[in-house]
Length: 627
Image (cartoon, rainbow, N blue to C red):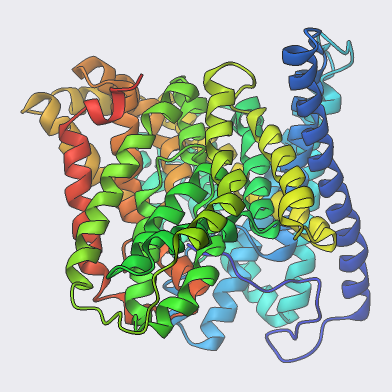
């Protein structure tokens, strides 16, 4: 899965080679610019409101009773409009591995089909979203005493803007013949399924395979955005095989996207961008390099340690890799490290740190399963250490003969100076964790403390804050968050449909009846989540299967925090292991390395991760010992 990198705010030729109409470009710029300014303002408003809530409750002892309600109201608007920005920028998560191998003509057709399929899903749900907002008008919010329609209106407005952005994108990237053929293909498939509708109810549980495996797999593989693939499969299943109203999809999307816990997603994404922009990440890496740069494989150890520390701040693996790689890779190349080995270690260190708080996957697990996020944050530290030590063992073996004759060892004074500079940055992960554990702020609010801390440190200590980057960072945060949370919304609707179909009961019975007890259940879970991680990524996989499997884990006697660490690490291995893991290709893009160069070196690192995963799975204390 990867998001295209073209920014549709710029002039792009269509598939036929002609430039888009001037009016299309003008409309796109005007609407896109207004949307980007609005989502940036919404993120700033969320930061200010939540920070005020923490200060008033904890320090002034006068809680703001309205802060959570306002934050929740603005959050749904942020998600809906952020998803529209992501549609405009072409940044919704897609599986493009197969599409990229097609000829240019076929690739252009499939890209247009993906846009058309997204447009169809959005238009099909636009009226149900309007009806949902009207139904919410009868509800009055407790603190503000206003109609809940002010919040719910974000859904029809957001879906309408997403549809408009998809339409403008089609006008800008495809000529009318290509657009007509793609629309014809989408309509033909829809009509075929509709014609088969009388036969489908009689197929029973086979419909689950047809829609949730077949339709989802086909649409994902041809490059349709993952969120749309989930939504189309769910819409087709409800419309063609049940008597349930399709409007429930919108309600389930609202439930999945607007959970207040998930407000931490955009805030931690912004925090990750902020620590890179303020120079905090560079200071941490420089200190670690002064400690270990003179030993064999020293900079590789620094990379592993830096990923561990940075993960404790940003919560986003892409942000982690983007912060660390540009600092370390040039020096590592000068010392003779091969590009393939560099990107292999970068990717696997991303998998190693999947459980380091504030991991977005851990936050998602807490939101969909009810497991304490504070417990997940506490339990995630030591498993990351075990995985890191496994990687260090491979580094030690591979670099045992490294030539360090030209490398100078840092003096004690240089190390002390680097520590002094890095200390405020190194302290940030511990400040975040302490604030949650000691009740200063919730897992949602604590990111605002981190943002305030990073801004102050950037202004007073590192003095590298570039204010002209703030607006692009806010827009990037909104687009990425909208893309992630739109997936969670449609995946929540799919998980609800699976539950209503009886699939969850069947899955529980099957998993509960596995021979071998706890050991076999964990083994099957590890294999399943490695596969899921390679094709779905962590968040959608957790939203789909977390509510189904975590209750089973409790029934068979597996501690929920231990189980969370096992499945998150397993998904991390799948996510960052080639040939299917998208995280590997993200690491290659960040490191500017050809993916084929890392295929061989990564084998040893992935083997080390599997050994570390086996240890974490077999020893529950690693995950639960500090709870």
